[in-house]
Image 1 (tube, one colour):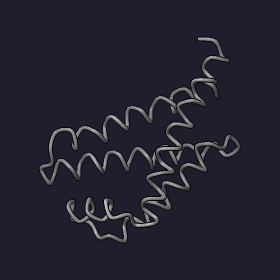
Image 2 (cartoon, one colour; image 1 turned 120 degrees about the horizontal axis):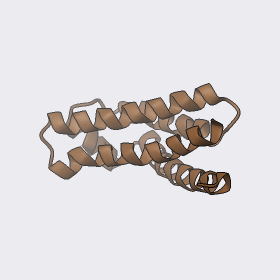
Image 3 (cartoon, rainbow, N blue to C red; image 1 turned 90 degrees about the vertical axis):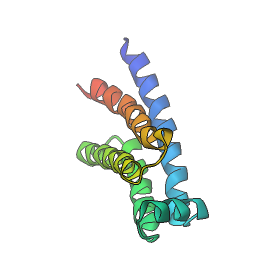
Length: 122
């Protein structure tokens, strides 16, 4: 692939990921009812919505900036941990297959901009 194509794809997938995380982060910070229901179902305290919501919003800032590479790397790691934790939580409570698999699909999607970013910086 040409560098310009890689850069374009990187930004397209990064913006999509950033928008999804922003919407989810705002939902967490504002403690939307659907999030509260989901956390109670998984056995977590509701205040976790605010903590994870703020972390997601900070991760968005980190992944769209290009100055601090280590912070960006840690943000991707945090996002990955979030998706793996969601997968495990849904699996442990015995949710439907789609609810268990969906965080893994999101994890795979997250790796697209990550790998494109790595390709751009090497």
